[in-house]
Image (tube, rainbow, N blue to C red; front, side, top):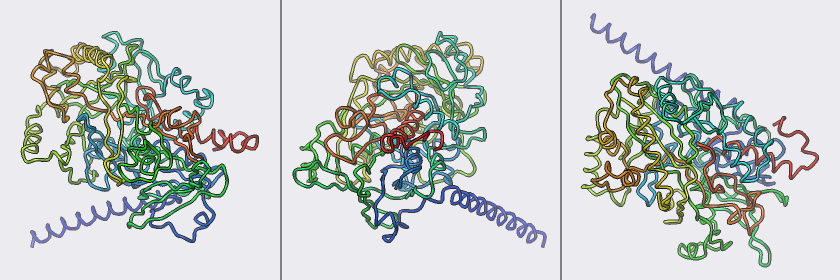
Length: 593
């Protein structure tokens, strides 16, 4: 009887736990519905809706880091339809919590917030597939672009600063500096990356602590939360809405004119949705540096030969679509520790005049609320993706992969990494279609270290890393004996997993180490550059009523980490569009919206 009673009590505890989890989830979902009543599943898009009949003033393709603030801003005065192929981030524990940073990246399920891809260079990468875009899957570091960058792109500095502040006041936080990060900042100063600029969003030479979109409880605040500033009467956001192509009016003798889009909903049904008849209405692409050039190509804008290869009806021959792709190469050195290390993502940065940025991360974590899922051939343990492309998944390749994971040093789970990345790489690559399925990744080449100056800067960056790792502040913190350079590099070669063949002289040649261990920090950009694909106000050249607002238009990644500027860009361009369209009627839009 006692055993039966104990069993009943145990079952009661399990039931109560399940009810608590269920009510918690339901409470969160109810909060989302009340705060964001305009967010709906794409399958709820009814044919008899008013906007469906009369058209939208703006259709934004891509609810990412730029698309969300753009939609919120434009909805102050005009009807906006925002189409996002992924789901919402708010109830996804893999997105919401700092502890699960690596889990969201490693999830290969069809509903994952990230979609993995491997560039032809052999570097594993990821693109966002969730409302909020890259801000939902990144390391959270928030820092503004340099004044030089703002002047280079020709933006209004006053409006830029107002737009940054609009973002910061809603979702950005000051981090509580982890002990690891304190040792890291002291080490940066110790090796001469000075002065110490304290906590600041500004891009300043030296060492600084930046902002974060993780709050003090470790919860992520994405660009999707900026939608709360939108006008619910004029804003419609559809999730699980995968745009297939743009619709153009190609009447002979006139410029092609964007008039709408075709999208597929979560049940597999296709819908056509159109702009209003106003000449100033626009389709705006905010799909990011991979999705936007891909969407232009699928819609008939791009190099003639590429379109003919896939039997895509040509709307406009533009040889520059998909060209000038770039990614900031990253290399790292592992720092072992003999003491427990708390998980921390990027909180501080060293900004050098050589164009090398130094950052650090530490530890490993996973929350109890994490959504567990099948990760396939993805490595989650150290926060860096690693996989084998489908065509290369031979039994031998898989066994080699398993062995590489098994051979990872045990210390990889007890320590951290110091990272160096190249700012504004000169090396350039390209993007092209592999088929006409929008769900499949295009072929992307970044051509890492194709230019010798990029490789030179990497070597100098790795030399800085070795000095930082050997600093007394790190050795005192980790309680490890000073490691030899060869040992650290050998550990790092094993920990940095990519698809690039390794060489036996990795630790003897820093040039080879750079090439063999290059990974990404997801700061890719380009593909639709200004004066080649778009004008300075980001309107697509050669067509009307089509604009691009995202990182595909940028020739360099802004600041040490781009998310701050891409969110600001969405807000900034929204304000500029309103001011251009409304003129004097615009009034003081910036302070109201």
